[in-house]
Length: 190
Picture 1 (cartoon, rainbow, N blue to C red):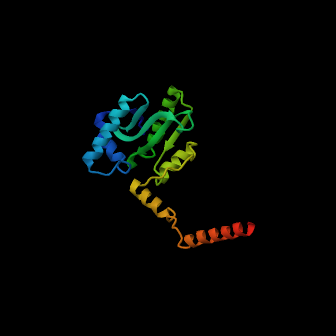
Picture 2: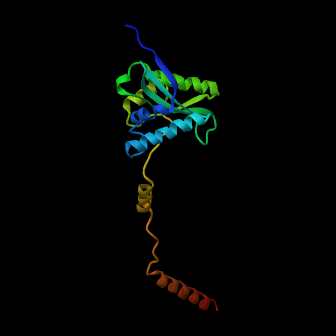
């Protein structure tokens, strides 16, 4: 039995619904219609922007996985060119068929075409298989991104803020004592 080839291509608008299913855990919360609309926007944006690609892999004619690629710098501070490989994902029934490898090969090929010397990959922190796959491809951790709602971070910052400095009740007593002491010193020097 021969092994089927994986076919890699750029995403088209008709892929939006399946991509919304593939990345359901990564998209913003909302109903299915909103997620599909978001994915349609991402597909359109990626196809219109020369610095982005949304690549899908098909296995036996079925959409099996996808990855979002973006040409940028390693970080806003490190200006070496890189390709961000965002959330390479494969449907569970197509894993272990070379789909992930084909998606990463597409990322490397595009990076080479663009002259980018590095790949920066991001997989969900809870995805053990995804992170192990990245490690096997020599992609090591360079940073940890953390996420929280703005209101929660504001509340935590307010809770950690030192209490407002209160003017001690003894401050007036202390000022009067200093003045008395200065008067004594000036009276003794006369």
